[in-house]
Image (cartoon, rainbow, N blue to C red):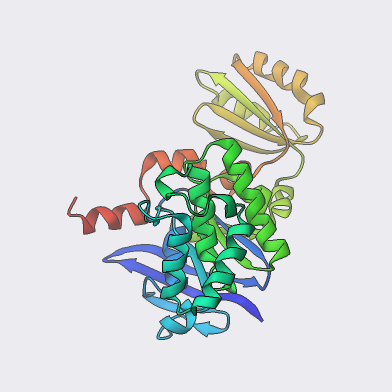
Amino acid sequence: MAAITVANLVKRFAEVTAVDRISFSVAEGELFGLLGPNGAGKTTIINILATLLHPTSGEAEVAGIPVSGNRDAVRRQIGVVFQEPALDVRLTGRENLQFHAMMYGLTKPQRKERIAEVLELVDLADRADQLVEKYSGGMKRRLEIARGLIQRPRVLFLDEPTLGLDTQTRRRIWDYIRSLNRNQRVTIILTTHYMEEADFLCDRVAIIDRGKIAALDSPAHLKNLLGGDILHLETAGRGEPLVKALKKTEWIRELKWHDGTLSVTLNRGDTRIPALMHIAQQTGTVIKSVNLSKPSLEDVFLHFTGRTIREEEASGDTPFRFAHRRRQGR
């Protein structure tokens, strides 16, 4: 049985569509990622699955339970780590967990046993009786993950779990998430706009662009769709003459031109650099820099949407942001 099933899901805020006819399923024990810029609709999807929002139309099930009309039953099957911190920093780590466990109706012996287990799982047993206000950012995130696991959920939702953390702490959180999935067999759905996070953690990734799924597969298969190597050529001035010349070159598989950079997909890219430089010289194009890489999820996002995630976030023109501004009267 699938842990999550979503069929033709739609969520509108006034006339703005934040989630637009999305369908996907997540297998039990899978680590599934929703990858896209802030405002693409990822958190809205999570909030619907966690019964925090009602869908406009479509169907969704968690652990075989329809989310519409079954809020309490669904919530007994899930844990949620929200994007925004939700800890009481005036309490200790243990007290935060005790309060959460009481909300889920665990008896005193159950609370004691389960709190000890999750504190050990996230490596906070020795800091459990310290005030949360003295925790580092990474410790707070681990405590939030522990809280999400307190009732032994079948599905754990992680909304941007490493947002705002430094690189070293982020990698440690990745290790905890992967361990939870592999050793505890918890089905995990995470949202992220970090390409390397989705690539490192996820069994499969759905690329979300303006409320729609642009592509869905394993990170490896998505990158293999592009094939070959990627050469990123930064040009000075107009690059159109170079683009026109390269379109006639048979060993080039794909060209993408955006924001002064030409991305060229081709085989054996390291051997083709001299030829590319020669063509650039013939067209009068000045090349400022050349970068050779294997296809990344950033390249995949660009391939399917025509933009990078950074460009999409910088524009701010996402359905959720429009809806949010309307609700705030801006």
